[in-house]
Image 1 (cartoon, rainbow, N blue to C red):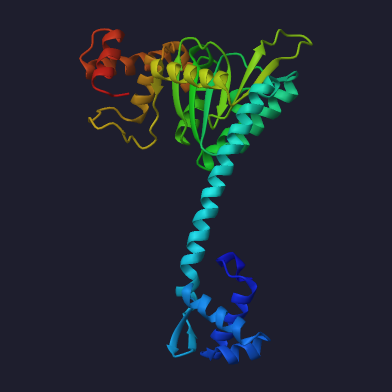
Image 2: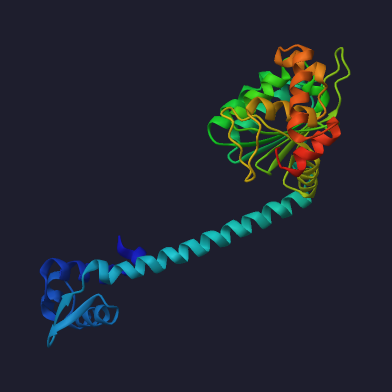
Length: 325
């Protein structure tokens, strides 16, 4: 049992006897263990050299406390096991990298149907542990954004979401409220005029993107599942580049502002401003928020007065300079 601490069978038997007896000499040890006197003397001498026993009188030995005698051995053995585990993990990664080079089919898996694509959208979000990156374009292929309940569940268990919306998508009925709800739950949202592709990346380990746009009728969308590779790194870099140039969409339920400079805007004003800067037309904002166009225009003019701006372009410039968004 104690071989993990480096004890042989005889050493373990002799040490256990010493622990039970408290003290022993070579003749007593030999009699109890069925050994010759010479073998017992050798065992006691070896235990003393190994720090398992100490000589309390000429020829008589007592055990060293097990935690003192065996504890450091176990720590060293655990360190050795940890080093070996790290070496195995490194070798495993080298093996996987080599296998990917030999078999390119393992890097990109083609999904030939809408059902397969929907299943992967669900699976990637359900299995995500840290972060999901999302390109949301107008005109859904698999499902409308409001049906993506997996995102809500992932946000609830602490998964970070960074989502870039195409402006045309924000103009669709119900999307502004849907985006606001996601932001309230923790989603980080930004907007750009046009996105190059639909895409989801989970934990920077797997990307999912359509290869062929749905053409209507009986045509099925075709998608690619991209795993760890230079291609995946390029897709992550594409997302980060779009994220840097995208306009933040802000909605703070209680009016809090995370930036250091003070902001004179409340939550509704911040949200309206973020939609304006993102390029959403006033008419669409009014429709999405259930307001009249005149009310939206009145609130925009109020923002312009706060910023001392004569035009909407000046308002956007002032908001950027003052870090309102």
